[in-house]
Image 1 (cartoon, rainbow, N blue to C red):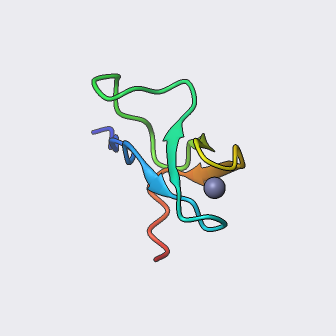
Image 2 (cartoon, rainbow, N blue to C red):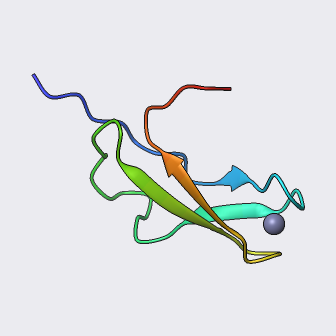
Length: 58
Ligand SMILES: [Zn+2]
């Protein structure tokens, strides 16, 4: 059985506290395999964050 994870729809930018949205993935899209790298873009400072899906390091 295959495990899939729905990525966070938005994350908080570590640099500026702004909101980052996934690039190339939208709410309602298919969940992703654990280990998939999903880039996020901050709407405020435009920094890019590569987030590993299913990587539960808080
Ligand atoms: Zn930012």
